[in-house]
Length: 244
Ligand SMILES: N[C@@H](CCC(=O)N[C@@H](CS)C(=O)NCC(=O)O)C(=O)O
Image (cartoon, rainbow, N blue to C red; front, side, top):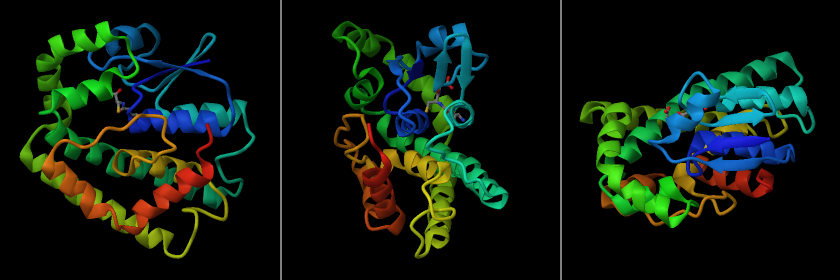
């Protein structure tokens, strides 16, 4: 089994964590953002990663990959057996994939695209030097494309910050004194939310070798959340459930 991925991506981390959690052997295949379409479109209808390849089967998207794993590798389960809990779990996953995942990406790209060395590390780890070098050549074009696709405008970035913050507050309320988001067991809701926030928390259990954030304004964004209860909870989920 192979996982086409961007190693730093929070959606890829979600799929990878589910594979590791279920102890399904797989080979991660890091592909370079920008050129990834050439590889991904050979297998899948959309250009996005993660994509899971299992012999002739192709599964695209982190949620679809968890569905697939739940079906073929049911134990340990990531989805509650109770119908109400299952619905709650899937609702949190879908909502937070967007509200945390999309918004944090917009906020961080807005500041970090201006740092080519930092982006090169994120986009080309663990590729050979020649690929890292060639990345630098086409980065100016890629930077524009990423800005158009994900950052869009200052107004959209402001909105993303507000929506991200509202989602964090909602999660704080939801967790209250609970250990898990739904029921008494670790589920795909916890795994998804913690993965979406891996870009913020950068937990040591995450397989990506994080680098220091080079931009002062982005660092202030990180600092704002360091004492947030959900930030601490993410660290806890990683320590307790992110085996590799
Ligand atoms: N809803 C998708 C989102 C995946 C996604 O946004 N992937 C980004 C990387 S973080 C990507 O592949 N972007 C490049 C593209 O879409 O061509 C999922 O859960 O897998």
